[in-house]
Amino acid sequence: MARRPKPEEIVAKLRQVDVLVSQGRTVADAVRSIGVTEVTYYRWRKEFGGLKVDQVKRLKDLETENQRLRKAVADLTLDKLILAEAARGNY
Image 1 (cartoon, rainbow, N blue to C red):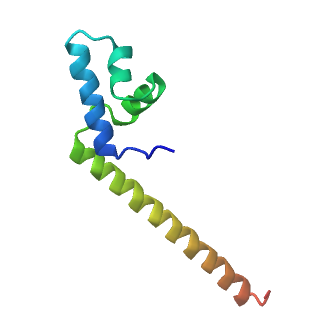
Image 2 (cartoon, rainbow, N blue to C red):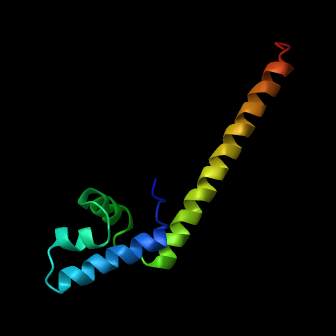
Protein backbone atom coordinates (compact mmCIF):
# COMPACT_ATOMS: atom_id res chain seq x y z
CA MET A 1 0.00 0.00 0.00
CA ALA A 2 1.36 3.42 -0.95
CA ARG A 3 1.92 5.97 1.77
CA ARG A 4 -0.16 9.11 1.89
CA PRO A 5 1.70 12.22 0.78
CA LYS A 6 2.21 14.99 3.32
CA PRO A 7 0.23 18.20 2.77
CA GLU A 8 3.40 20.02 1.73
CA GLU A 9 4.02 17.35 -0.93
CA ILE A 10 0.44 17.71 -2.16
CA VAL A 11 0.84 21.48 -2.57
CA ALA A 12 4.08 20.90 -4.51
CA LYS A 13 2.34 18.38 -6.80
CA LEU A 14 -0.56 20.79 -7.41
CA ARG A 15 1.93 23.49 -8.39
CA GLN A 16 3.70 21.02 -10.67
CA VAL A 17 0.42 20.35 -12.49
CA ASP A 18 -0.17 24.11 -12.84
CA VAL A 19 3.28 24.53 -14.41
CA LEU A 20 2.78 21.63 -16.82
CA VAL A 21 -0.64 22.93 -17.89
CA SER A 22 0.81 26.41 -18.43
CA GLN A 23 3.42 24.77 -20.71
CA GLY A 24 0.63 23.40 -22.91
CA ARG A 25 0.07 19.93 -21.44
CA THR A 26 -3.50 18.80 -20.86
CA VAL A 27 -4.71 18.51 -17.28
CA ALA A 28 -5.08 14.74 -17.72
CA ASP A 29 -1.45 14.38 -18.89
CA ALA A 30 -0.15 16.67 -16.15
CA VAL A 31 -2.08 14.78 -13.47
CA ARG A 32 -0.82 11.45 -14.78
CA SER A 33 2.76 12.74 -14.61
CA ILE A 34 2.48 13.37 -10.84
CA GLY A 35 1.23 9.81 -10.34
CA VAL A 36 -2.34 10.34 -9.12
CA THR A 37 -5.81 10.00 -10.59
CA GLU A 38 -7.82 12.98 -11.78
CA VAL A 39 -10.29 12.36 -8.94
CA THR A 40 -7.46 12.65 -6.41
CA TYR A 41 -6.11 15.75 -8.14
CA TYR A 42 -9.46 17.54 -8.00
CA ARG A 43 -10.03 16.47 -4.37
CA TRP A 44 -6.59 17.84 -3.46
CA ARG A 45 -7.25 21.03 -5.39
CA LYS A 46 -10.53 21.51 -3.54
CA GLU A 47 -8.83 21.06 -0.16
CA PHE A 48 -5.41 22.64 -0.75
CA GLY A 49 -5.79 24.81 -3.86
CA GLY A 50 -4.45 28.32 -3.40
CA LEU A 51 -2.69 27.58 -0.12
CA LYS A 52 1.01 28.04 0.47
CA VAL A 53 3.10 25.36 2.19
CA ASP A 54 3.25 27.24 5.51
CA GLN A 55 -0.52 27.77 5.42
CA VAL A 56 -1.09 24.04 4.84
CA LYS A 57 1.17 23.16 7.79
CA ARG A 58 -0.74 25.63 9.98
CA LEU A 59 -4.09 24.25 8.81
CA LYS A 60 -3.07 20.67 9.64
CA ASP A 61 -1.68 21.75 13.04
CA LEU A 62 -4.97 23.51 13.83
CA GLU A 63 -7.00 20.47 12.75
CA THR A 64 -4.91 18.25 15.03
CA GLU A 65 -5.28 20.69 17.95
CA ASN A 66 -9.03 20.95 17.31
CA GLN A 67 -9.34 17.16 17.41
CA ARG A 68 -7.39 17.02 20.70
CA LEU A 69 -9.58 19.74 22.25
CA ARG A 70 -12.80 18.05 21.14
CA LYS A 71 -11.68 14.84 22.85
CA ALA A 72 -10.79 16.76 26.01
CA VAL A 73 -14.24 18.42 26.05
CA ALA A 74 -15.95 15.05 25.53
CA ASP A 75 -13.95 13.50 28.39
CA LEU A 76 -14.75 16.41 30.73
CA THR A 77 -18.44 16.30 29.79
CA LEU A 78 -18.55 12.59 30.61
CA ASP A 79 -16.78 13.22 33.95
CA LYS A 80 -19.33 15.94 34.76
CA LEU A 81 -22.26 13.64 33.99
CA ILE A 82 -20.80 10.88 36.15
CA LEU A 83 -20.27 13.30 39.05
CA ALA A 84 -23.81 14.66 38.67
CA GLU A 85 -25.22 11.12 38.84
CA ALA A 86 -23.12 10.38 41.91
CA ALA A 87 -24.22 13.60 43.60
CA ARG A 88 -27.87 12.61 43.12
CA GLY A 89 -27.12 9.29 44.74
CA ASN A 90 -27.78 7.24 41.60
CA TYR A 91 -24.55 5.29 41.62
